Length: 130
Image (cartoon, rainbow, N blue to C red; front, side):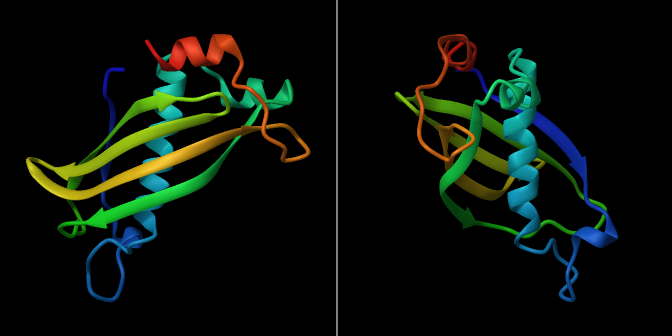
């Protein structure tokens, strides 16, 4: 699958007392990139939820490489590494220019409203693997 990216400006409220982006904010940026990747490929996560098809993060790993600071413009890259029966594996990176800030892997599980794993609907799987 192709890499999808979003661009964000770092604001003062993104930073901590050390004047760098607070580490947990990277998780929000990565979630936004994954959701935008889905939207770009025609997947409405809110419509899927109305149909009882939900996605939950079940695994996440991140390596922080360099800090982002107030005023930086960052790009958050996301791509689908693979899809399984009920899982989606993502590879992500955050960069400021050519400087790598973080690398991560995220796994979503496709679940129903009772939080039980279900197969990824074929139309979603197809859209994710374009």
